[in-house]
Amino acid sequence: AHVRCKLGAPPGGERGRRGAGAAPLACRGLGAHGRRELRGSAMSGDENLAGGLEGCDEATLKKLLSAVLRKDPEIRQKVAHDVNLTAEFNIVTEDERRHAIEEQYNEVKLVGNDDLQASEDIDFYERAKFVPMRLTYDERKYLRLIDATMFVSHYTDHMDSASGARANPARKLALQMKQLCAVLTGMQVAHSYEEGQQLMQSREFVSRSGFFQTVLEIGRRYKILNPERMRDSYGKLMYFLQDSRKPDVRELMEFDTVVRVRTVYDVLSKSARGLEMLEDPQLRTATMEIMPEGKSRMQIQREIKAKEAAIKHLAKTYCSVARRRKYNGRFGGYSLGLLRSSYADSDSENEQNNGEELTEDLAEQCIYSLGDHSTYLRFNREPCDRLIAFLREYFDPNDPGPPEFSLAIAEGVEGARLSHSHQRQYTFVLQSMALWREVLDNMFQLWHLAEEDLLDEEHPYTLTDTGQGLQRVQKSPRSVVAMQKILAKVQRKVGGWVGSSTVHLGDHNVPNALMFIDKYIQVPRFLGPLVLTLDKIPQLSQSSDGMKGYIDSFGGVKVLQKQILADFFRHAFDGSGADNFFDAGSCIDGRLTSAWNWCSSIERKPYFPIFLLTGFTGFDGKEGF
Image (tube, rainbow, N blue to C red):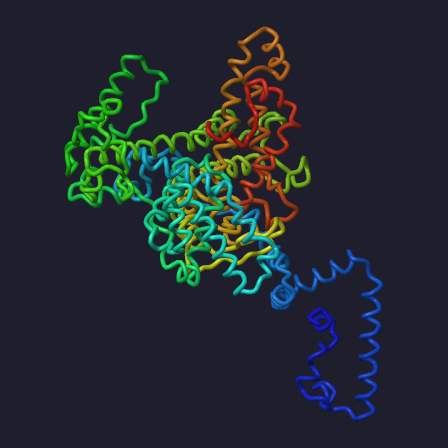
């Protein structure tokens, strides 16, 4: 009916709305004979239209329907809801396509400071608000429990299936409750068989709410600290928590499964002097990462001793309860209190009695957690820093040099979908890697905001076919605002912006904040192996005469490195990866799409054997590095 209305034929319900004998408005000035002729011609037109549609093949009908849906957003929404044709939400209108094409070559000029390196000043007070606490010995027992529970769970298979999407609300709620209770019950049985039996009989989950909240929070905290772990389990965990926060589900469960991720700030703020430690100058020494490059053994030992002394000094100065040594039942020189968590299930009476107190052991744990964050930042930002250094060392923005080393790309040539001069592509690459570096520098903050968006009751998700299966599409306002602030900061640093500044989040490209975080934690996974290969080429050349001869066939070490870099800087940032500028191109999300597209074609590169000879196995990394 919607298609016939758009093509000029009146919908079937038009006559019924005006009454059986009422004539259309356009016919009211005609006589009865004229109206009969007009009605007859309209009917014959309908028959001809229907006959023409019946004679069309399937491809033509799809094109016709797609054209109608693309032209009128109102009809597109109506058809999608009436026929459950959720995939049609992904049809981009002509205006949206035109706007995306125009944005690909935008250019904004600002006054930049050209300072892409990290600032030496560290604001520990702000950083502590987003740095999760390192897991204790007892918490790791709960980590294994939640990881194993989610690993064997088929929760998302049941809830996000096509049949589940079509179910009526009452049936869907019953299915959710059944799956939620199954996961929670299984978790309790695995932890304590006796308590699990009692829970299965009473079905009073609220009586064990503290246990469930603790275990679920530990899983989320561990994933933030270790992005390469729990790849499958974390997604199912967050979708499980999403459903558990629905008002009707929470009313039946009688408790909220979600609590704040335990951060360093949360722990220190419970003590009168805890936050003062964040202002102490020695905290920088206590959390610094000791790198061995270019240092003698004696210098490294001095730095280690200075760091250990700073940790002990800070812990003793700012703790509210001194460490209580136990001589009966010592383990490895430490008191058992050091190996216990501060949760209610802990066996440590001292930890339970002290409750909110900042013990010396807990203060040390806070310092170690801040140190872990420094290591995390170096590991993730270093590949971006190294590639930015390679770009500036090997390439001149004003002089492209020989054609094989020019960064210029042209649309339609070697898969490129953008046309950039050498200078423009140099700037485009520099800006993209500066943006990735800034995102990774703020990853903990973005991760907390992403979880808040995912678990936000005011913005529920819709299960939608995005063209890549059923996905939970959800608005993520906090993550979008944070990303726009990061983008504005990078634009000020580099002095402008080349290309689109559109941030895809909450659409069919990036359905929700979980997918957004997952895309950016992949950056070190494909930049790291590239940097490692470039670093190992000189060693590979010196390993044997035969290997030196093979590398010399490329022109030598420096030429080979520059050849690999030139190809990466050209085709990992050429807008490829999709057949339109809405899904790929120069937008913020499209730059990552192009990079992954380059990674997928690495085995077809002439220098691919060099990657294999340096120990390369893939860009996806390996769990448990």
